[in-house]
Image 1 (cartoon, rainbow, N blue to C red):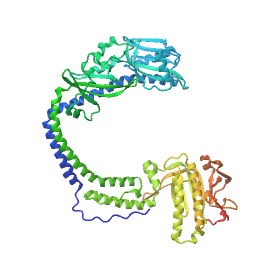
Image 2 (cartoon, one colour):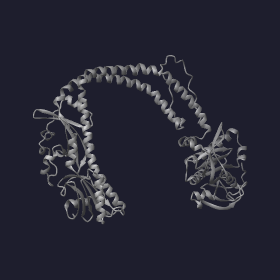
Image 3 (cartoon, helix red, strand yellow):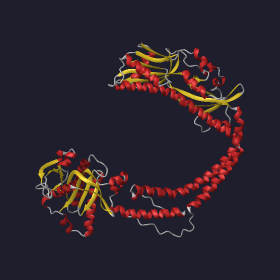
Length: 629
């Protein structure tokens, strides 16, 4: 890729506004007008602030109600999940009654909101621990044959419970409770039963009642009108039974709550106060007085939606609301105009900044060819920044030609520590064109450069496809390595795949060259794996991220050995020699023919060498007798 030309030299820009002046004159001026106008209106409407406070208070009520209700349910859920985990891991023996009693009692101590815990085994044996009038009671019964227990076990046996929160009547405790149940499975996956924890409805009501204040009453409903929590729940506790574990709103004597779902009374002012809140709201009229209900759903119990809410008198606040609407409308119009103008100007300012951001991102990813064109701007600083950035892109374009982009990108990702010299286990690959001297004699310098560039492009693509690093080009030779800068445990396998892909690519290219009447390019490849020192090597003014050591020398000697150890009597596109170390690390010892332990030039110890089978076309002639480069 050739670097792009720099943009035209900057023209006279004395008429271009500095960005600071533009922001001051536009955003500052417009927002000052908006703030002053809103401030004036707010001063006139100061007394209406109570209304917003009331809305916020209602939201706080709902958040607290939902949080407390969820906390009580989750307290039981955590206890039964803990029991399920003990059974699943084998830490709890269900047949050991003493151990089972201790664990169940301990789970109650860990969850102060939980009143009782029951563990029903697959055969119907039920073990229960709970508090009755502040006394810990332990019971063990056989519940086999009970319809509700059979349904629970059948559902739990499937591995899931459609909704593990239910309202139940706890006979031993004589009161309605919220039950949380989970299935139990043993270490071998066998079904063991189900565990349940219960939280008293009356205790939830006490917490809900504590949130109420003068003029505001809180509640929790299940379904349409069954009451889960209310300040008056204690007054009807004696009237509840297994057939009717929850009272209805009309049973509590609260006329306002009983009329919650009557025909709503809603005017435009009320719609505006509840608009866009994270809740629903409506007002009803009871005995000539209007009351505002604010509520929302907060999960389910037994598949039915649970509603948390608060109601408060509306008439005492509705009049200030009407005054707020008038003044608020004026302020809103002014604010919207200011915001609209600010948005239009902000977009105009943001466009060149976004282009710079996109260009900077392309540079950061070393994708200079994806850098968008930068247009001139009427803002002096932005225009200068874009011209400077374009000049930097040109300089980086030239830099990119001589530095491996993929290597730089990985080093940037790994950080400065990746360049520190250290010994690593790596695999080195060397290639060389056989008979290159004779091949070069018949070509002009331009033709020879084109041939090498196309050849190295083929090889480089194979290296990059396996996340390798092209270290350098030496004449008609290429050196690449795997295992650095990032750790690659399968570096040998990657290198072997890349070498075979090189063979396939060269063979395919040779068929095209032969069809065009051009001579084939014959290639030798050497592969070796072992330790090497990897890191920045060189003078302070010219560093090269490379590797040194005996492993590099062996790989180069194996490539040269291909001249002597090619396929006798045949001429192949590619001869690939690899050491036993590489094939062993790649788990590919069957990949080729064992040539035995051979002496390499400049090395005392012999190296076990394999001639690796590659899928290349065979050609007449003698590859081994071709003139070396």
